[in-house]
Image (tube, rainbow, N blue to C red):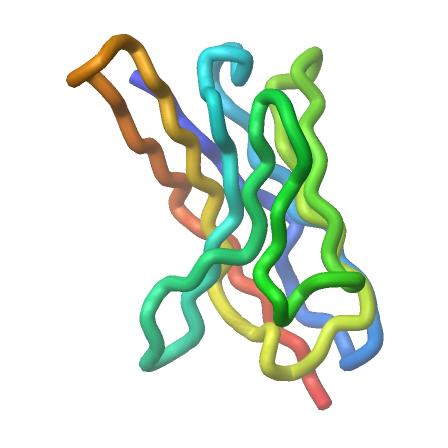
Length: 120
């Protein structure tokens, strides 16, 4: 059973930075895509950044230029470096992984989330 464990959340002032980590229980090379999502109170979960096994990282427009996603296969960890944080970035941030085994067999995995609170 795959486990994704996020860490690095916390309380920060506007303009500050945080780095989130998502550690997988096994090799992340099995995942064709890993990503970060977030969910603010009363809102739907939304896409933040996708970090594919190969190819370029993609970002939601509202974080472009401020957030950077990265992947360390040796540590089985993905990261989300968040700079210039705004109060509207306050949310629970979730790590996501997609595993493609064969046509018709795919799995989605989610972490438990880490709270990020940005004060004004």
